[in-house]
Length: 168
Image (cartoon, rainbow, N blue to C red):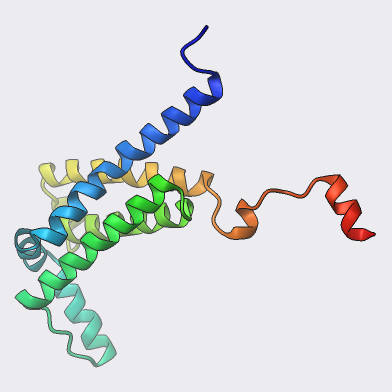
């Protein structure tokens, strides 16, 4: 007479956990795609353009990163957030998508919240963002580690009886 079985409850909690974990990416991704100007301005003021220029100089390539490029870059990040979050929630290559989100959050954290030239000088409010993002990265890595990635890993295993039939 219980409300739901243990397996149903486990599935419900897992799904709710995934939705809550990915909700920030859906909201942020939608905002970055539809209203990119504010986030693009923050990216232009961050350490990212400096390190992008250094990478371009090292490769002998000039990489433009003005207003237009930063808006397109912001929209691309937003689109990736939406795509990967949907994949995590729906379960399409969940582990790979969670890992991609974790990498994106790590990069965003480094460029937007840390003083990369002197990490010890990072302001306290930014360190709180770093810790929050580290928690999100941890959740995403847990999802990545406990989800299959690839058709062979996700495919149901053949029973002993099916294997005997194949051998005959």
